[in-house]
Image (tube, rainbow, N blue to C red; front, side, top):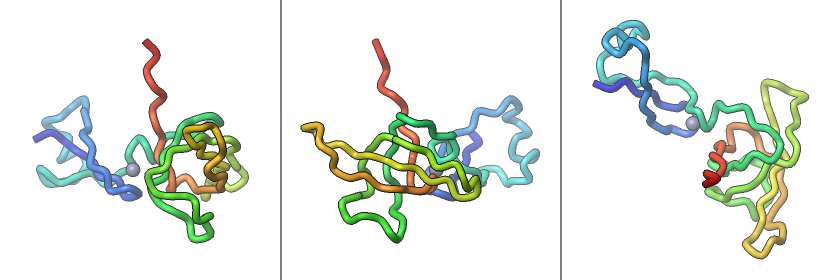
Length: 118
Ligand SMILES: [Zn+2]
């Protein structure tokens, strides 16, 4: 049984490739098939300016234009409160105009891998 994790932020199930798969469940105090509750890479990764992000949830005071599933770019990271990281994110329309500019929290955002450069 391939070990897997479940993200408490976004509910994503993901595979884990441990060094010691035979004893992995026991080492984590889990039954076989039971997921490890742990943040996924997309929720956990530290975001930097110009990283691409996807909106996975909305804060209460969010501008109406912001929709779940929108992708944007981190313009500024507000690192003043490490318990509650907030980011200034801009979402751009296909024609290059700004669709919205909003302050979103880390748990509202998924990291998006940059496109592969061939
Ligand atoms: Zn997650």
